[in-house]
Image 1 (cartoon, rainbow, N blue to C red):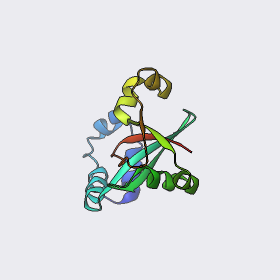
Image 2: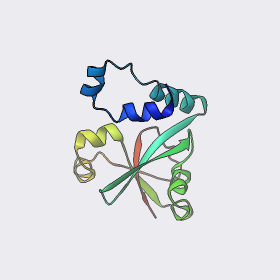
Image 3: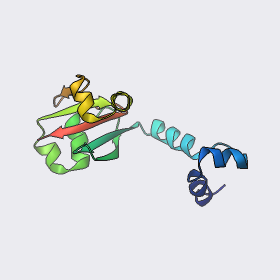
Length: 123
């Protein structure tokens, strides 16, 4: 199966895939294996509670270096970062609700970004 077919299949709903009795996609498995082999993680950023974006980072890098992936000023002028795991954020329902519940952690320059972190950088 080529990448074009993989892309087309990924657009189908689970119900449509079941109707067609399609095998599970191997693309996700391949991507996960590559990330592990290359020691990469994914972190996410939020902007004003409206925009979320995924970023790739070498495992073990600190918050300022992660900020530098987003914008060079975030690394140069890093003060702190508000961090939450994406699953806890989904459970909370919104960034503001996570803040109200005290689920956001304030991290400093020495924080090693974890796979699945959602981060708002403060400069």
